[in-house]
Image 1 (spheres, rainbow, N blue to C red):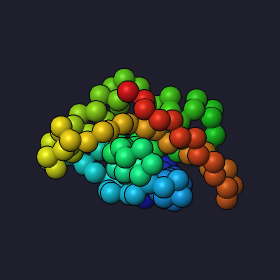
Image 2: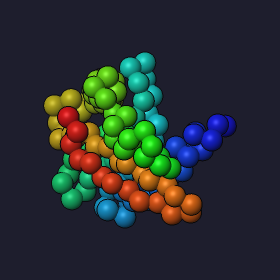
Image 3: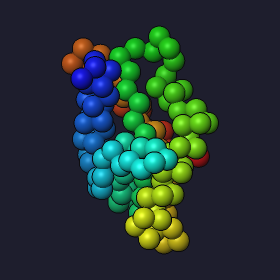
Length: 120
């Protein structure tokens, strides 16, 4: 496994812990279909919303903040994949949904998470 995959997996693991601590219920990780992949699907118990979450992990900001990597093309893939998920589970008309980004900054053995809600 490449180092960036190891860092990405760590970021997703930290994100799951963060979300659970914030009162979210994790429904699925790494949901894939032909239109793309969603890192985490969770339920925000406070707002009663289904949340599709893109996790972007970085060890430095030399090339910009992690959320900068979620460009319009990536947003379209997330949106299409989320719609397919809702279709697959017959939830198109019955659920409040949003799409978030979690920026995970890892330095040494510590991490910090910035939760950006409703990117679309």
